[in-house]
Image 1 (cartoon, rainbow, N blue to C red):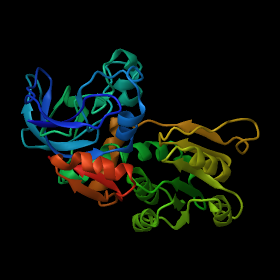
Image 2 (image 1 turned 90 degrees about the vertical axis):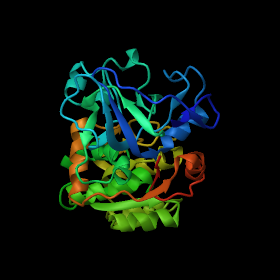
Image 3 (image 1 turned 45 degrees about the horizontal axis):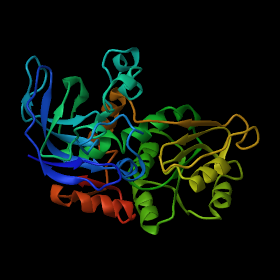
Image 4 (image 1 turned 135 degrees about the vertical axis):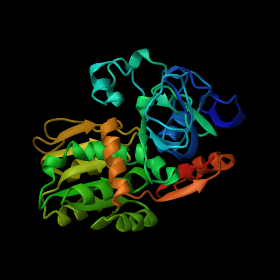
Length: 345
């Protein structure tokens, strides 16, 4: 079969022919319908040196995946060939206390595992088929199209987890700021509008992204730049926002986040653009919390899929055939895509 593989550090991926996967006991082979292209893939491909990540090369890219059950290994029950499913992205040990709670994104034995999931050190979904090591990592999609559903597994799940953790702050009259209205940002806006009464302010440097933010439900759009913090302050009557989600994570966006979060608020860093935020007694408002976040739990993925099936979440998707996956990544790198790029083998 065909697979887009990452073969060497700081080199573009290659479309290669690899053997078809065969499921062992407890494993499942998925025929891929869609695999999302994520900014984190670009960071891995272009910024990391050998030895910085616990990944063995080569491996197939694609950590945002959905498709149809193709083959079942011995002992697998509860799934049927042809059933549409989403693949839960972070693969933990499955046995520690956090994994047993569905939080494999924070597996306590992660350091002992080769890779952190399909497409992240292990073979992912930018291929005709994908081997999933355990049926516990699959969530039924029902009537959702796997191409549209693929971004739910990361681009929606990651901000959903961050928002749920701050939902107690987002009552009537509250404000949430989403910095970056791309793949994750436009999903975060929809989630905020669906599960909270907060006023949502989107920030981006691109007019097209702000237009997508408005379509996704943002109440206000703010152009990134030197006047953005003051504009947000005016929109929040000088108070700042209860929640600021920085979906970019660069120096400039982190500075904006710190300037716009209010006292007792939450500043959550979602993006991994490599920026830093110095934290001292006077660098953020009193009792404002600064946190990072990584993916979400499998039960939260179930929630996200339910919201999508109810019509509350819809990913803005641009599709590419597997033969044009490298082009998709290049357009993503150049900021030419709106929403999420999805590879459709």
